[in-house]
Structures are given as C-alpha cells and as structure tokens.
Image (cartoon, rainbow, N blue to C red; front, top):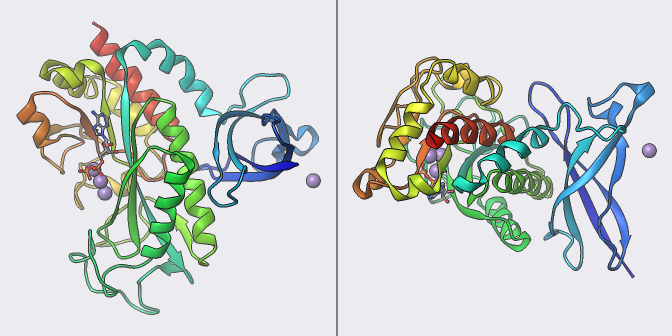
Length: 335
Ligand code: ADP
Ligand code: MN
Ligand code: MN
Ligand code: MN
Ligand code: MN
C-alpha cells in the first residue's frame, strides 16, 4: 500500500513569494525524504542549472485528501547542500536557536481578500458596495461573502493539527482574517505557510482566489495586514520587559530594518489612516490602533502579557518577521 505526500515550498517570485506544491506517492511507512524540482520554473534557478532540493521540515495530516495522506512543508536548498538564497527559514533557524531560552511566542493575524471574476467577493459588477462599517465581524448575506470557504478552511487547519486560534470577517467586503498562535519562532511561520496553502487549495474548489495583496482596493478601503503578537517568558511575567521590547523596536536603525522585512508595498498600507501608523514614524501605546505597536488594554491592567506589532503586511514572509522581532527584542531583553 502507499500514501500521497504533498510537498509544499516557498518559491522565488518577486516582490512576494508564492507557494508551490507537487505530489509524491510513498510506500506505507516510508518517511517523506528529500526531493527535487525545476527551479527555473519558480524563479529560483537558471535553466542550465535548474535543479533545486526540497528538504522536509514540517509534516502534518492532509485534511483534503484524508486517510494517510500528508502535507510536507520543505526548505529549499541548492545542490551543493547550502540553503537557497530565497530560503528565509534557514536565516531564522540560528536566531531562533540563540534566543530559545527566552521562550518567544507569536500570534500572527493573517488578513486576506477573496477575489472572483477580477473583483473582491461581494463587490458588484460595476461600482462599489456600500462603504465600510457593517462588514467587520458581520453576519447576513448582505454583509458577509465567502463564509463557506472560511469555515471549510478552519476545519481543515484543525484537522491538520495547525495552531489556528480564530477567524473573523474583516472591514472590507470579501476580506477575512485567521490567526495562528501562540506558537514558537519557526513553528508559527511553518503553520502559517501551510494554512495559506490550505486556503488557496480550498478556495480553488469554489472558483475563488485568495490574495495576500496588502492594498487590494485603492482608495477608502482597508488594506490587509499581518499584525504580529509577540511575547517572551519575561514579558508574560512582567511590565518592564513589555516596555523594554517596545523601546527596542524604536532604537536607531531598527525602524527601517523592520519595515524592510515587513512585506512588499508597506508604504501604501501604512499611511496613517485606516487604523495604521505612518511607516516611517515609530510609536507605541496602550489600546492605540493608530500606533506601530499596540499594548493591549488587558496587558496594561495585568502589567504583563504581550505586544502587537501592527506594521507587517499581509504579504509577509513570516520567517522574516519572527526573525526580526526575536533578534531585536530578545537582544534588548538579554541585557
Ligand atoms: P486582535 O485583538 O488584534 O484582533 P487577535 O485575537 O486577532 O487580536 O489575535 C491575537 C493573537 O495573539 C492570537 O493568535 C493569540 O493566540 C495570540 N496571543 C495571545 N497571547 C499571546 C502571547 N502571550 N504571546 C504571543 N501571542 C499571543
Ligand atoms: Mn517534468
Ligand atoms: Mn485580529
Ligand atoms: Mn484584523
Ligand atoms: Mn490585531
């Protein structure tokens, strides 16, 4: 007997990487081993040196095929055994290891937008729907578009054993969010990439495309972000560590470094309106959805907990965001 393993990897498309996958049939009991692919078709290699290597890093049940089928998330390597330049997970591994003792946790809020026939789900054929207001966490056929897909996606993530912690309808019609976390530095990003793959794959059956575009509709419509909630053991135990983390993110050089790793087109989304702070000015505050980093009100009451970096775009590579946060905050907390 045999089973199906869907090998999933992050490609080299600029400015934002996409997911690719292909199927390998394996003998029952065989572990998913290394595999290869044609890097010249994924923006990862020239045609005359096209072979790239897939190394499995996270395996979970495949809720779509069911049975013994597996989803196999991989890192991409060159044939000489070194990580491919587009392999951001490899860059995060040593940082995650270095600060493991501080027990970093992440919760990433992945916003996204459904599209069909070239426009967001719920948008009329011509013109625009009624302005934003009733859609966020709405209910009813006039306010909510795509719930069937969202429910199927949540069930699939749970069946795969992903650390999904919730879903909600967002501010613009056809826009939704799911959250992954709390989970570790690599773990949250691994689970997020697999959850994204499941989203695309399930929406495909409804003839709908999900996009992580950070500003899918120009004008007076909310963009799509990936608010990243972060804590260490010290932050979960006391207020001083919360403030140290917030301050560290505003240190000289840090604002630009983080913004550069927080996704494509960030200046278009972080404009200072639509619940965002301007991308080039760092601020933090309690309950303030207009600041770069928000301290939730409950955290101020408890004098411990976590912080929310509101800057990352929906189209982030989460390995870059977790690496930057761990590197900046944990380095400051170590002192
Ligand atoms: P918001 O109120 O900003 O919409 P959400 O409820 O959508 O927040 O997401 C919050 C995320 O933060 C969830 O994924 C949750 O699991 C995660 N989270 C909760 N506590 C912590 C913590 N101590 N450290 C890191 N992440 C956390
Ligand atoms: Mn072929
Ligand atoms: Mn949220
Ligand atoms: Mn949101
Ligand atoms: Mn949030």
